[in-house]
Image 1 (cartoon, helix red, strand yellow):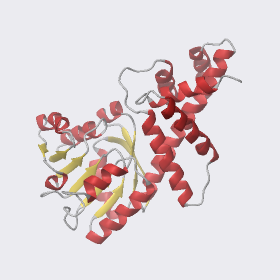
Image 2 (spheres, rainbow, N blue to C red):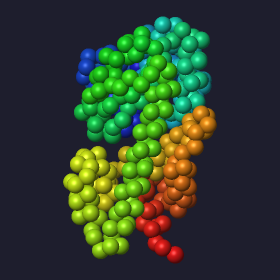
Image 3 (cartoon, helix red, strand yellow):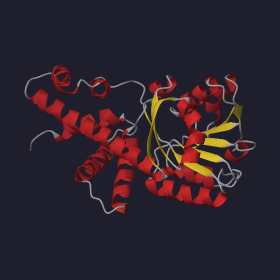
Image 4 (tube, one colour):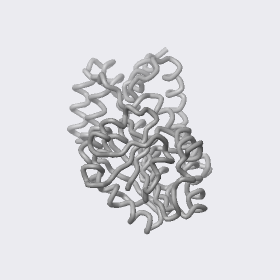
Length: 292
């Protein structure tokens, strides 16, 4: 039996891919309503995270943030003490490097294998089973995790033997996404002030230089904001904060990240809350692009 804890926009399609791959699954989510699509496909719903662990040999967590991990793993009815020695924990979330280090220590005390395996991709990519996994951990643990990770991914990159390394890479990747959005936003503001439609500017530059579907996807979101928001500006701010904390822990300064942190703080202050990550950054570029 395998367990998935956290059935949000990413956890649900990942769990469905595991079920489609023939894995027996127990699931838990803070909001019980989110378990229904999984039950319909054959999963067993648990009342608490600890209950989900009964008889399980592996748990995958896809929780929102460090606070959720603290509650689900170390709180009342938590997972950390419910996992049996010899078990496996795969963390697919975007969490702090510090928390990943703590999980490594806590699991080692209990004789539990731990793999950091955060994923790149939006929910639609998860539904197709085409996420990209960045994995780190002991060889034995990663080999145990690989069949599960392959159920919802198109590829896996091994980045080291310490789970923290995978979570560090994920934060670095999300920083590159924010930096890309930031540069696109300012370039669109520049083009508009020169009398060139941002769409026309992007088509020209992307075809000539980048030829990137990824750039294209984010440009589309920025210029034509979606009705359904997947990633919010608050999530972007959280990931940037975790990146800067990880950098500081290794005596590293990232000047662009420091500048962008000010922009995210201003975006959160001005609102509206819950706006799309890319759209929010573009709006900030438009606000800040007016020369005084």
